[in-house]
Amino acid sequence: MPLPAILGAAAAIAGATGLGSAIHGGVKMKQANDTMKKAQTEHQENIARFEEQNKNTTEAMDRLGKQELEILKSFEKFSSIFERIQNKPEFKAYRKGEVEIPPYSPEDLKAVYVGAGVLLGGLGGAAMGTAGGFAAAGATTAAVMAFGTASTGTAIASLSGAAATNATLAALGGGALAAGGGGIALGTTILGATTLGMGILVGGIIFNLTGSKLSDKADEAMEQMEKAKKEIDAICAYLVELYQAEDKFEKTLSAVNHVYQRHLEQLGNLVILNGKTDWNTYTDAEKVLTENASLLVGILFKMCKVQLVLASGDTTNVNNVNHEEVDKAIHDANEFLNRTGLSALA
Image 1 (cartoon, rainbow, N blue to C red):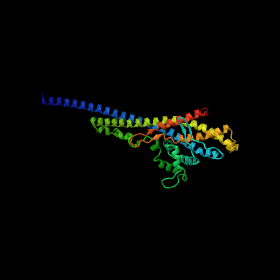
Image 2 (image 1 turned 90 degrees about the vertical axis):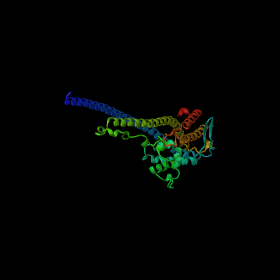
Image 3 (image 1 turned 30 degrees about the vertical axis):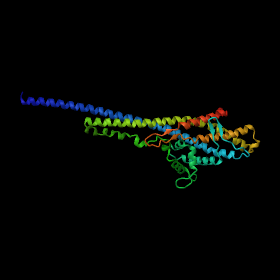
Image 4 (image 1 turned 45 degrees about the vertical axis):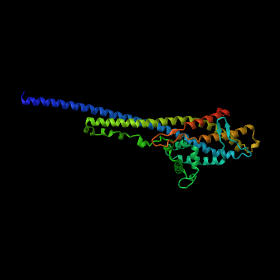
């Protein structure tokens, strides 16, 4: 065969081989591109899922925290009315079966309602999740701390607005995230889209990589997405668990508070409007009203002490929902309402 023909045949074979390699490389690049886009889409969906659940749980916890502080603040009105009643007996702790409502002193109530007033005054300018942090740590505890002293040596009760709120948060050892959040440094645990290797899809960089290198990058991005998904799944599961615990706790707290507010109004009418301040002149019904009002304060006082969240103590793990105390508080409150016949008013 003449040399030109041989060279021509060799060139044809080489061209075909080159074309085959190009096609194969193009297929790998497309597959890698599809993998990268899938990883990016799934990661964005996971982030959106987390943000939605975090928003729902934070709003619910904020609502509970604010309600608890408002209940504690209302003890000021109760104290003012209750202390006008002369010759009243000393009401003892309530114990029926497993249900116990411990006694409290006027000083206890004062520390709580003053502190709650301070915190409520600062919530207007506070960040989302602040009130929820108080609920997570126990609003009564937060209120008592607000009655105390800031790290600067200044009485927190003498502060106002956000300064008082921040001082109490500092005393509690953190804010909403530390007290009731995911328990993980989300900024470093949940990877942003840019850390998933998505940058290689920008501009013409993709064409400077061989099919094999691009496949490696795509696989790496998918692995990182899966790792982030596991972290997000764990946090979302915790947030759902906390949301459900908050929901049932808030319903019971609201029911007890509804009964308490009715008693507080009736007691105010009796003592303030009718001027009945001598226990010895009270009818049996009026005595029951007064004692039940005092016991309802005790129940609410106790419920607002409940820590909905227990810190894990490990920044790599989510916190724990305090189901034991939450369920016990709900049970005791319902038992009291049922035993006293007040459940019909709830």
